[in-house]
Image 1: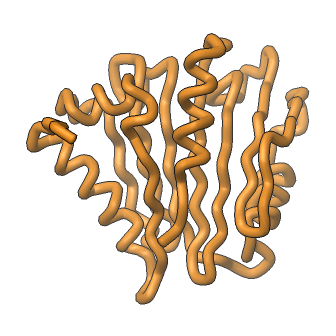
Image 2 (image 1 turned 90 degrees about the horizontal axis):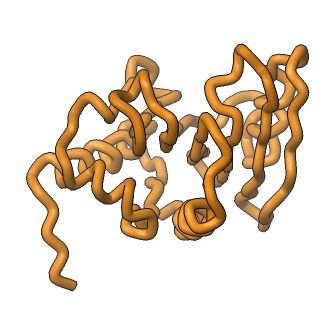
Length: 180
């Protein structure tokens, strides 16, 4: 394929894979094609460590955040967040996790949620929060995947409305996600 990725990009990709491997024994791993969204690939190829945050302080709930546009993982306008978690009481499937998210949401904000795709083990939806000061992002595309021993959530977050081409590329990336 003629792909050239620098050492940091490989380390970032390996770190993401290791995040998924940090789950309990015999856990599944999440894979997706990061090349489907060129700006994400560019961040991973660039090697800007400030734009990637990794939190494995709780091995049962591991979080990666990659700032696709912005200065850092704490100051971004477009980001990908990947969460790997172990199933818990009441949260054993993609639907359960979505229900948990809705129950924990700030109900003082008006949220519009629209389904995009669903199958037996995953669901993809759009969540939009207009004028909500407590929201991390105004627009979030979410894909939750449920495996036999693991759950994964990919959230593509935007501070402002993305253009159609950007949305199509991100949705293709989300659709490429699978559990192995």
